[in-house]
Image (cartoon, rainbow, N blue to C red):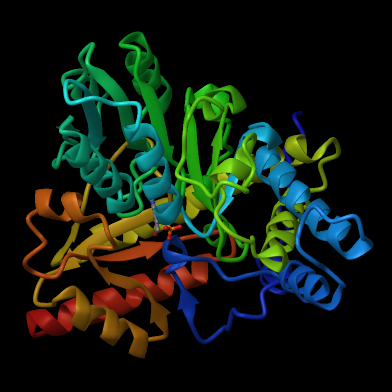
Length: 410
Ligand SMILES: Cc1ncc(COP(=O)(O)O)c(C=O)c1O
């Protein structure tokens, strides 16, 4: 019999998170996860250690230089990239505006850029604004509103030999859909275009391998996978080198540092490494950190799917609940509406029932337009992450059932 890596029990896992409480079902993980003690301790320890700015000859500077290098290695192990291709930054949105600016310097008015309506606005607007400055054309690949799927064909339809970049998500932060990034990347590459993949949502849910995805650039944010509030873009170092990002003259001329602005948050970067180490230690698998990360996420993906099925089955059985999308490959993130409620009212009532979920567009701006929900305040989003339990999922289902019945006047 195959030996599958085992995750700790719910109680063991949750004991790592001082921010969790039995009174609140924290089903808001897609907006940011709670942080385990190992990360808090690493940040605390970093702030208690003599650290100086990077690149100096003295010990305190060597410490911070090492912290930055360790954060690059950790992110590289998390997504299967190379440390020299890991650009660190404050968050995905800021980094994407920066990359859009740098990449747009290589475009001309005859060029075309492809974005998708499935994406978070952080992987749409920066490209639209950059294209607008150059006079390049933007083409939008549309997901299917009925199924929530973004087909390969929908992207291929808007590709041409003028396409320079395809920006797409590895997973929708609103409805969880995971498009076939590999097939879309292959199609983009066949037209000579690059891909910029938004992995902010996906990275917390499934094993990630940037090469297998064919992602030329892959963006993620550590606060979505139990780390502190920082982001990263991972690319092949050979792709970074020819780009000309806006930078200060004395700042590095080579390597990922060329894309990083100002002094980095060393204590948070110590936390990034701790988060990746902690994730790698979730199962008792042996091997290097990359192998252990893959084992953890393989086990997590299975666990999250069981909870997703429970949530979807429970919500679908409630009169007045409409689920958005039903993609085949998806993360454990679900958006829905409840007849008789605005999302704002429902999330407030759910909070009274001890359930924390988001309502609104969750910055999936184009997606909510396509679902025709923009005017009515978007949808309710429940997202299940590694520390959520079946009991929390049931609490949400029961509370929604109760409130939906109230709205129906039962
Ligand atoms: C899929 C997705 N992309 C991008 C972002 C923006 O990330 P950041 O907050 O790091 O800018 C988010 C944040 O919620 C997200 O869920």
